[in-house]
Image (cartoon, rainbow, N blue to C red; front, side, top):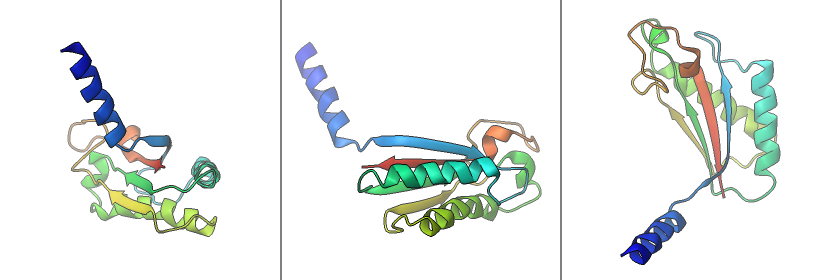
Length: 129
């Protein structure tokens, strides 16, 4: 039985694409512009993407519940798009880029309504080979 469960776990692991690396940055409240640290993160993503042929570059952006009281979920999509646009400017092929704006409906960390939570104003970039 133990051999079977180990084999099943190994098979599941092989069938699931793994992120080769994840990059992360944070936005100021209500802002979509990349910070200096954000530009450094995007340059790191571009350099890493050039080490192979990524099958998917997943850009996932969030917003906090305090922003949700003030802005629409479009804010998170614009954050993700800001990262995607900068990657393309740096020469990354746009074909594997997938942009996801999570809005306040799917916070990175659960928080009460109208709470400013820097972790929830993050964007992550996962590169899959």
